[in-house]
Structure formats: structure tokens, C-alpha cells
Length: 324
Ligand SMILES: O=P(O)(O)O[C@H]1O[C@H](CO)[C@@H](O)[C@H]1O
Image (cartoon, rainbow, N blue to C red; front, side, top):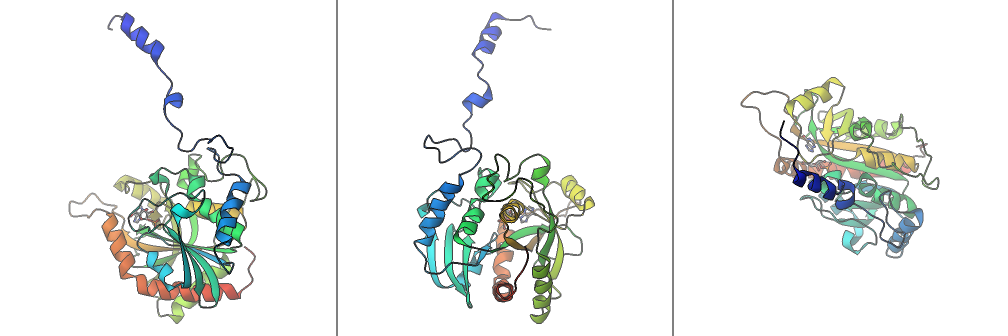
């Protein structure tokens, strides 16, 4: 063993624990507005009030557009578009394929708001911040959340371009204690221990399967289990094989925390995954590799059918009374 050297001891004395030198992703800004545990109810109310002052009709349904699926918001009529950077306390989108604005208006007779661009954990936002727009939607009066995402198909029967109705999810990041509800709970949003066994509304899923038949989409519609990983790297072969073993059908980097936040504040939830690529579960030399361009291309390829499907779903969902 090398002898202990006096310089090493002096270096050790100067050592500053990482906690003191690394900035937190989100810190208290001194006016009590931001903290690592999330914005207060009152702060989000300010954001909601700002948005309410810009619109003439309160939306009942909120849509989150997945990667490459931003064109879903283009079916909104009498659109009022508000860029994220203009909205107090909002994060900004940094990912290609995520525009970065809220679009208010009507789809058919239904007042809606769409997020053209969502926030992901890998962008550097803590999970509570990724989900901040969901709480804001709740505060402006949205009752139902429709979350869409692009996902890798892990179920071997799935094909690129299939549309998976999400029946359930596995919160992989939650297994490691990373949850959007981590931290003090404000009962005005919801309970400390919200149940998740009925996260994806049964009635909505039933309607979605019926509508798929009406629109002759039955050959591309699936129903399955989604999981979200932190990203931004796509998964290894071993990781995907593990996820397959535990019953995951589609893999992405979003949605789960949004759904948890929405259910916490008692919103009805429906989610769709567009299968944009095949998950690579073999080490074969000729097996492809996932890439974001393919994800965006498949989103574009399916934009017409998704726009039609989502607009009919919005109409049907708006007509039923559901218990979340
Ligand atoms: O979940 P959405 O936002 O649709 O995007 C998915 O596509 C991106 C990877 O191509 C990741 O952000 C993944 O989560």
C-alpha cells in the first residue's frame, strides 16, 4: 500500500460534499414560490388564473401530444395558442417533436386544451415539474386527461404503427422512490396515498375499443401495459428482456408520472401508445437499433388516423358520466 501523503490529507480537508457544490435541479428561489418539492397550490393557481384570463371557454378534456404526434392539436378549431415561455411557472420543451405550446379551443362541440410538447425527466426536470401542467389543467377545470405517447413495442405480436390502449402501467422509476407525488402532500390536490389499481378508466377503454371497430382500426388496435424508464438512452437488450418477463407490452419515457398526478387529483384518465419501433430483444448482428427519427416518422405516418380516432374519442368521452 502507498504511504499516506500529507497533500492527500490536505486535499481531503478541502473536500466539499457533492450536496453543497452541485446545484439542485430546482431550488427555493427566495420568494417561497419554487422548491425541490414542487410549486404550491397558490402558485399553480396563479398559472391557472393567467390561462383562464386568456380563454373564453373552460376545457373539459386535456390532451398531451406524444413525440411526433403534435399534429393532434391541429384539429382544434378557434385555437388560442399560448407558448410555454409565456406561461408563468411553466417549464419549456427541449425535445425535437415537441412544439412547446398549449392549444385551447374546440374539437367538435367539446372545449379542450392540448399540450403540444410534454416534459420528460431526462430533460432535467424533476418528475413533479414534468407533471405541473396536469395540475394546472385540473385547476382550470379539466376533468379528463388523454395522454398519448410514442413507445417501443415489446410484445412480439405488436407491429410498428399499432396503437395500444393503455390498460395499466408499471412505474419503474417509482420502484426506486422517484415519484411525482414525492414530498409533502397538499390535500387540496389529493390524498397522501392515492390508489392506482383503476388508473386507466374502464369505460373509456371499452369505448375506445368500440370506436376502433367503427373506424375499421381493429387490426391495429391493441390493449396492454406501458412502462416508463428515465431515458434518454433507449434500452439494452437485457433490460428489454427483463421488462418483457414482467409483463410490459410497450416501453417509453413519459406518461406514467402524468397519469399518477392526474389520478391523485381525481381526473379521469385515458392513454394511448403509438408503437413507433420494435424493441430490440436479440443480440443478432442484423437486429436494428431504436432511434428518435424513426419515432417521429411513424408519428407522422399515423397522424391522420390518430387525429380521427382521438376526435371521435373526445366526442364520446364527453358524453358519458364516469366515476374516475
Ligand atoms: O413519450 P413521448 O413524449 O411520446 O416520447 C417518446 O419518444 C422519445 C424517444 O424517441 C421519448 O421522449 C419517449 O418518451
